[in-house]
Image (cartoon, rainbow, N blue to C red; front, top):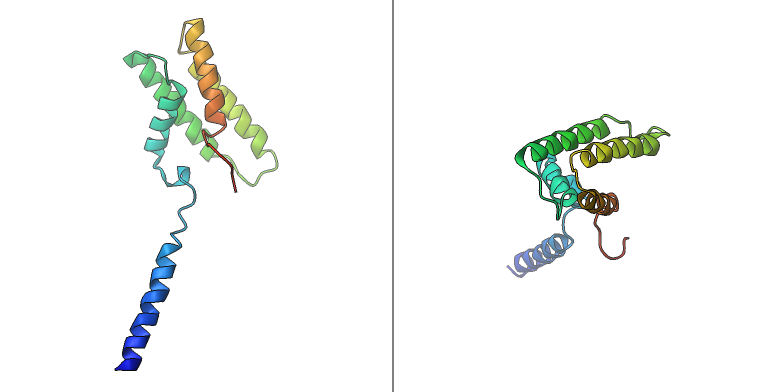
Length: 125
C-alpha cells in the first residue's frame, strides 16, 4: 500500500510539473483562424478611420486576397522576403485607394506601419 501511494504521489508530481510547462501554442497569430486574422487586420489597419459599408467590403476583399497571395508563396524560397514585401505593398496601396481624405490616408499609413511591426510590445526571445 505504501508503494502504491508513493507511485501515485510521484505520478501526480510529474503530471503537475508537465502541465505547468504549458503547451506548445506557437505564438498567437498562428492560432487564429484566417477569418479572425482578416478581421483583426481590418480593425488595426483602419483604427481611427470611419469606413462606409462599401469601403469595408472592398477592404475585406483586399485583405483576403493579400492573405491568399502570401499563403501561396514558398517560405523557403530565397526571394520570399522580397515577394512578401511586394505583396504587402500592393495590399497597402489597394487599401489606401479606398480612403479619400489626406488625414485618413496619413492615419492609414501610420496604422499600416504599426501592422507591419506586428504590434508586439516589449522584448522578444
